[in-house]
Image 1: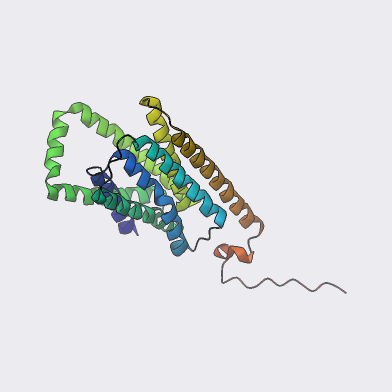
Image 2: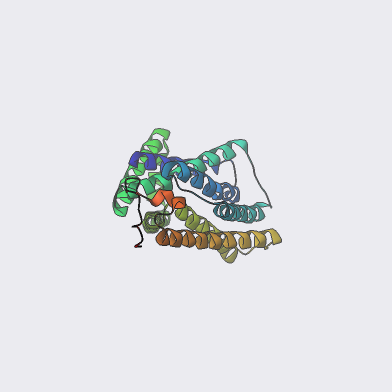
Length: 259
């Protein structure tokens, strides 16, 4: 499972970055935001998780809201390219596998710190080897020695990214892979909002509609998750919650009432 997570992380990051050679950043955000639905689909097969129609509707609302925001931000020059779209779509598929496999590791009792450390070590080795084979590694090293400011930025980014990944693993460990994707989509929403704050640009009706749709979908998803957990706590033996009942438990028989 560690190798699966590391492979998915490597493919997700590499393919997503390579796709920027063919498409612009907002277009990448549009496609990357659609990973919530395939993640839910994989959760059905990997963890036998059951989602009702309202949960699927909330997921669709979040994805469409992010799509509207991304489209609004890229309407000036949408640079679609078949190769870039294929690459970013493959990165989305790899990214949707990752949280479900991480959840399986946590269910086996693996510690969050171990998952973060081992996964990132394996991913770093894979990406370093790929850079060395492509000849880009030496160019990057020369650039870092030449530009000290860039080296500082990369060091700060690495530290911040470590804490961000650690907190994301905590979310996946405590609430599951699908909830982790919801949080990731909320982060994307905040990223786009901050882009308007730090780099002022016209706000269109489509952007406002997308923001409202995404926030509403995220809020609804949290409420549905809490409702599901409350039902599971109240009715642990309910047949509708077969995924939380131990199949080895004997059937419960009520004692006969006294006559």
